[in-house]
Length: 313
Image (cartoon, rainbow, N blue to C red; front, side, top):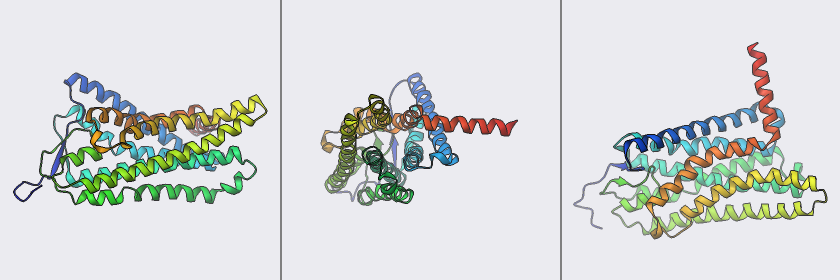
């Protein structure tokens, strides 16, 4: 498209969720409550893992990484979502939009890799218990954690660089509450075929490969559980993995629906609704599921409360 006689756009306007004021205020209260609970829950998990030496094992180190990730993952998008619920006009600069895009997809890719690593950790613990401490030692665990973060931040780097070279000439309204890929492409007056194809390929590879690795680990775990002779042992082992599977199902179910599909089939209304699940709901569900179903975490939390009462008295 010829852009020589067109005005360059310097900022975008988020449309968010349209509706009457009282509906948007209701959404604001709901989203704010979930956001604050998510921040509190994930911060609490990090605090417990750091303060209780009995939880400084690979499983809980990964869980602490996941909680730290969720804090920033939800913070990358929810503040603008809250803003769109109350304000008529919510803007973001083009550079700010590209930055938000990069950090959002970096956090998403990191979570995909981290969930696959956590599944592999459970596979080793259940299927190779005698060699677990050797195969998943603390140094190995830390390398896996660091690799998840590094890989996650590398994955969307090239698409982000290409997006930063796109021209935006108007319209400037984003039919979303954050800078997702498809709404950005729709606003560009440049040829976006290459960046769309690359972005779609990168997201599909990261999501599907981590999903398949995760499901493979849990498939082996299920086979091992079935072979256990004791019914009580089967129940206890499955209970440990059930919380992980719940988190994996919710997260992968929504992001596969949102990103593993041809760009031309994107529906903005459905996209916004689905985005709420992986931007707002999942970061809250993770600490709830991992803590409420985990006796060790609940025990450590009670110990922390007891220590606090002793200090206060």
